[in-house]
Image (cartoon, rainbow, N blue to C red; front, top):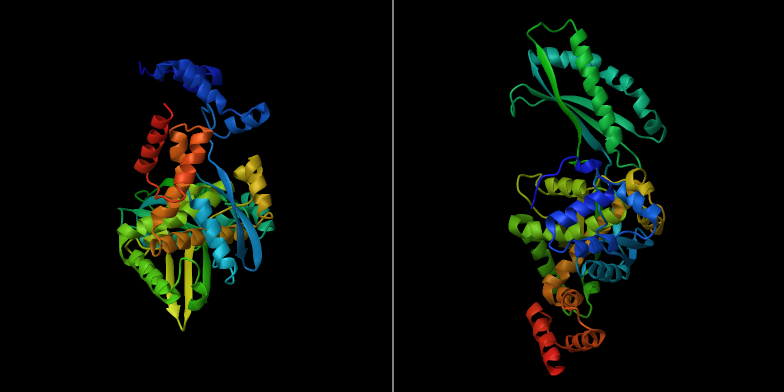
Length: 440
C-alpha cells in the first residue's frame, strides 16, 4: 500500500510496529516476530533504549568484542570494540600482541581545543564592526557566566573568541569563532549553549550601539559547534629497530620495512588509496568510539576533514626508517568524552569505560588513536606480506556458514576443509552444496 501516516509519533510502540508490519510486509506476523525477538527481556532496560531516540521499534545489535594485550604508555589495556565487520577485532589483537613485545604503543595529547561558531551577516563598515566586537568582547564572557561556572570549576570553559571576516567567501559573511576546553565531556551541549548566548548578546549589543547607522544591518544565521577540531589532537606511534620486526610472516625485516613505508607513502599521495587506508584506521577508531558511547559520525567527519587539510585527501598515518629504526605513527583529531550523554546512561557503555579503568577524556583519546594505528598496522602488514584476503576470508567464513544455515555437523566439516584450502564465497558455497548432495 505504502500510504502516508498521520500522527505516527503519537502512536504507541505497539501501534507503530503493527502499522509497519501491515503496511510493508506480506507476512506481518513474521515481521512482528523479528522485531520482538530483538527486544530486551528486561522491560526497564528496553524502555531505557526506547527513549534514546524517537519512534523506536526495536534494537539493532552490533557485536561488542575486546582486543587484549595493548601496551599503551607502559600500561596494559583491554580495548572494547563495537563493530560488525569480520577480522577487525582479530587484527587489532594481533597488532597489540606484536607491539607489546617491541615496546608497545606511545600516545601523546597534543591539544584539546574545541571550536564553535556564530555565523552572521553584517552590512556596514567592517572597521566599525571590529571596533564594536573588541568593545563588547568581555560581555560575551560575562553573559555566559551561569553556563560556564561548573565547567570552569573543572578547569574548562571558553578559551577565546575572535571575529572573522569571511566576505571573501560569501557576501557580508562574518563569524564569531570561539574556542573551548570541555575537560572530560565531549561538550556539545555546553558549547552550543554558550554560542546561543553569544548570538543573543551580539544582537542585543548591536541594537543598543551608537556606532551604527540605520542602514547597517546584522543578522544571525545560526550558532553551532564544529566537528572539525584540528587543535584537539592526539598522536599515537610505535617504533623499534628494523631487525626486531622479524616474525613468522616477516622473514626479511628490512624488505618488509621498506615496503611498508612505500605503502604508506602511496596513501600520502594517492587519494583513491588514502580513502581505503584511512577507512582501515577508522575501523579501529569507530569501534572504540561506539563502544564508549561517543559520536562516531562527528569523529568521522572531523577526521576526514583533517585528512584534507592540505588541499588533497591524504593518509592520516605516516612511516619512516631512520638510522635503522622503523617508526609508524598518526596524528588525528578526536573530540571525545567520558562523562555525559550515553556514558552515564547505557549500561554497556559504562561497563566498557570501567573495563578501560575509567579513563579521562584525554586517556580515551590516546586509547582510541592507538586502536586506529593498530588496525592500520595490521592491514598494511597483511597487504605487504600475505595479502588482505587470506585472514579476512577466514574470519568471514562464519558469516557464509550462517548465511546457508549450516548444521553443526556441516559446520565442523566446512571448517576442517578450509583450514587447508583457500576461502572464497564461491568455494564455500560449492563445498556446502557438495556436502548436501552426498547426504541426500
